[in-house]
Each structure stands twice: as structure tokens, then as C-alpha cells.
Image (cartoon, rainbow, N blue to C red):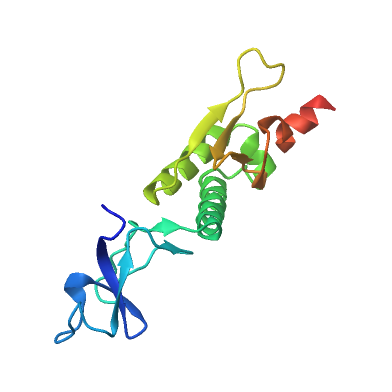
Length: 161
């Protein structure tokens, strides 16, 4: 898709797919504004008529943060509900970190956000752990705000002391 292409528009303060515009409304009309592919939004526009999510646009930094945090919180709730003995993010990081990381990865990739699941290097002197790398920061179930170095994740900080 080129930067000047679009599949959705804003009309009467609502988002519509081009094909879902109310009858009689001209997509080229002065009261219709295209949502261009190179535009940035805090969220993906959703058609008011059919519910299609238009994820061809770019998300702002804030938009990416909102989606990332939502996916991570959802993953924590999901993992805790699946396993009765788990109560906290700390519990998840002690045996279920891979499941958490892969769940978040799937959710973020559905939204077009690139994610890497990383794990403790074999030669590192600490227990095995899985975490995410998103936009140059590192996250796990205990650290939803992210850190700039994976060794600063709480699980590794605790193991050093």
C-alpha cells in the first residue's frame, strides 16, 4: 500500500470503510476525509458500519504502548486463570514465562507490532527465563513498563543479590 492509498474514511465524525459509507455519500465529497496509509493514530480506526479494523495505518508511540500494555495485562489474566496455583506476575515468571511471552507475542503480532521472544543465554549464570523485546525494550510478566537491558528485568536483579 502506498502512503496516499486508503481503505477507510471519516464522515460525520465516524470511521467507515469506503464501501460502507452511507448511501448517497460521495467518497470524494468535501465532508469525507480519507484515512491515508501513512497517517498516524493512537488506535486502529474501526468501521462504524461493519466493524472492520483498519490496521494499515501507523500507530503513534502512545498507540503502540496502549496495545502492548493491554496485551500484556490480558496475557497475565489468561495465564493466571489457566493455572490455579498462579496468583501473581512473580508466579508466572517462575515456570510459565514462556507461555506468557508467546501469548503476548501472538496478540501483538495480530496488531502488526513486531515482537521477539528471547530467552536466557545458555552460558548465563542464572535460571532459564523467557521475555519479550519490543521496540528496543525488554518486558516480562513482572515488568510491563519495560527496561532498556534484559539483565535489568526483576527476575535477574533478584538472582544477582
